[in-house]
Amino acid sequence: MLKFTRYLKKFWKETLIGPAFKLTEAIFELIVPLVMARIIDVGIANRDTVYVLRMGAVMILLGLVGLGCALICQYCAARASQGFGTVVRSEMFAHINRLSHGEIDQIGTPSLITRITNDVNQLQLAVAMLIRLVVRAPFLVIGATIMALLINWKLALIFFVAGPLVALVLYLIMSRSVPFYRIIQRKLDRLSLIARENLSGVRVIRAFSRQKREKARFLEASNDQMSTSIAVGKISALLNPLTSTIINLAIAAVLWFGGIKVNMGEMTQGEVIAFVNYLNQILLAMIVVANLVVIFTKASASANRVSEVMELQPSITNRCMAPVEPKPDSPKILFDKVSFVYPDASDYALSNISLEIGKGQTIGIIGGTGCGKSTLINLIPRFYEASHGSIQVDGVDVQNYPLGQLRRKIGMVPQKAVLFSGTLRKNMQWRDPNATDEQIWTALETAQAAEFVRRMPDGLDSVILQGGKNLSGGQKQRLTIARALIGSPEILILDDSASALDFATDAALRRAIASLSGEMTVLIVSQRANSVRYADQIVVLEDGHAVGIGTHDQLLQSCKEYQEIYWSQNEQPQEGGKAE
Image 1 (cartoon, rainbow, N blue to C red):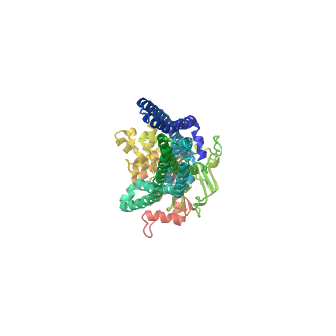
Image 2 (cartoon, rainbow, N blue to C red):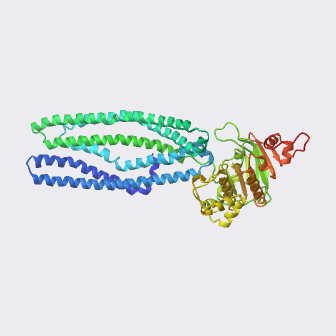
Image 3 (tube, rainbow, N blue to C red):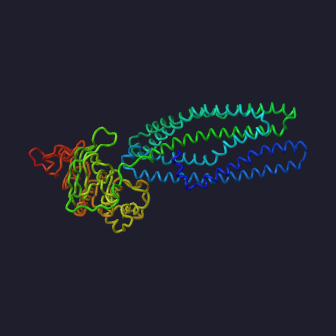
């Protein structure tokens, strides 16, 4: 946790002022029993009402000053802890955005969400408790013991018996409960994963009538987490009764031996009452210490989880920051013996792919599910790094491009259509924040989306809900295509982005994109043979290998895998008839 102290540098004043005022409050709290003793021994014993009122006013003043100190400390703790959490969360979010797809896949989205919310909140709480209680609780224990020694050192020996017993109880309970808190954090990840899957896949769950099964799965994970929490709760529940028993026995001993000393004239009644107050202060302080141990244990587990993310270095970084000049007369995209394997995977997702794509060409990529189509196109913008071989854009290895320059060349339409909350116009301006309405409408026309956008009451000012939940699948796909077209990218990648479109709209989209082929290089990933049949070249993938590269007619004659795909989707000619 010490490595997180650097985030408190901006709040060093609050970090110092808060404990100082809390320490002042603790000093006043230690003085109160002495004032009470004087009221009993002097005011009440002598029936001096004026003295009682005067000392009562002193107690009220001490209480008010202590309250003021506590409020100042609380303000400093809140300001420092919330500021600390904001800085950590912001830096963590920025770091996650620097990570490549591989690192994000390694940790998992649900776990990242839990870490940036729940774990950072736990660190915030630890900072607040650090400022408010870490100084106060030990000071009260030590201070109360010293004050008791000053009153009567013989009677104070009871403190030295009760204190170690309370400490032993705290140790036994904490040593058994602390490991559970680390387990609880891991089980929260599991719970978060199931909740996220259910919320994002609610339509699929209802379509398959899996509500009961998913409820049971969530209940199982929730009960698992609950059982662990109950187990640690049962152990922690012993803390207050055991410590209270020890302190109450100590109070009884103080009253017994203190009463004897009062009868012998060695002590006053007020001093005995002060002793009891100091014992109660020690009890409360030690319980606070126990709670602090729990809080800092949770924070330690959370700090490790946050550090795991912060220490994770992106595998894909800028190797140079200076803009790269394209090489003239070079292919737009060149795959040179490219192979790729996912981390921790045993088999290659792509093997020895060689492919040359000219400027302005339209390339179709087709193959069965899991053959490596999406993996292939994800290597171009360096979402993943090729394991072997090289990929060039405009004659320059993609690893030598600044990431910003490389990705500005590419308009990417992912498999899953993702839109963001806000207006339609704002969604369209993701590639180019300065895109005009005319440019947006041109892109919408090309993407076959202009018609339904015009029917919207507010047109480009229509509100898009989170994830585009107020749009159909086909509408979302067309809008994501339009978004990629804005800014005139040099390379347009369509990753199975027309799967939700009807055949007529798909054909119209292909014709519109074909009219742009002289201006941009287009890569179309699809499982529909008709979506790629008019491409300049078609790449057929099978288990990560390029088993065929050529035109539709060439592949229909020479590539068995392409024939199987095409004829499974189209009516085969009658025997003796002419094949396409």
